Length: 321
Image 1 (cartoon, rainbow, N blue to C red):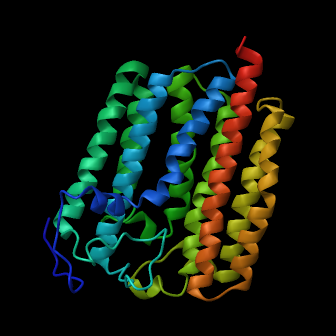
Image 2 (spheres, helix red, strand yellow; image 1 turned 90 degrees about the vertical axis):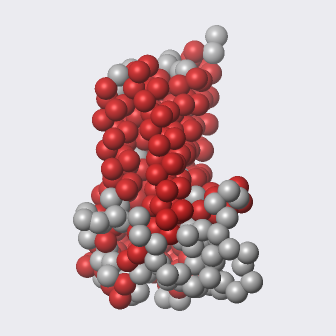
């Protein structure tokens, strides 16, 4: 990969690819509250149906965390190449780029190779699961890594061409949740499908909140999200629709008798969803809109944790004896 000339923050000791703390920054560890919990949701859903393997869960969890780490790194690399994320370190975004290159901690080449290593680790754990569980996991794994890489990498650059929302929904929800369910049960159920939709809606909702926040600056940097085409008001409506979709997916599953009624505990997160939408409707300042992004991430995490608890209780009550 060709290195770009990067302005290094004054006083920095220079690139250090062997520093653990640097790579913790590069993988944006705070964002790992998104995909790994979704993996546990899928496993817990399977446990509620009587299927569980701690060994396979560990493999899936580490593989998922590695793939998300690689996604974050590669997205930062290609955003940097495209000039999409030149934000100064003085105005940091806790869910945005790691800025490790901008701060002189890594070179662009080191960042790219770090992403490839992370994807490779995810692939190794995934291949073990392919050996144990069969070809469906191979399909999910290959598709997930390809979507992660080409989310910002050209020629596809899915996130730059209004395809980020649907990509996020698929690969932050169904691919992870249904994949985790399958490695536990070696089969699929409609309850798992609806659960994966709920998680996918909220995972994509984080991307949507981010796009609403950056709706004015993204086009200036050559990034055209669905939010930029819809306009602010309709984009906020899309965020609300995705939130509603998450609750409706669980509600429909409960009514249909394919998801445990205990899952309705997710309704306690409704105030968090309301707060997220209220901030997006009310605020225009970038810093204040960042609070809506935090609310979206909190909503996703709390929703997942409550689903995990509901499925775990159901598993204990029906299969613990």
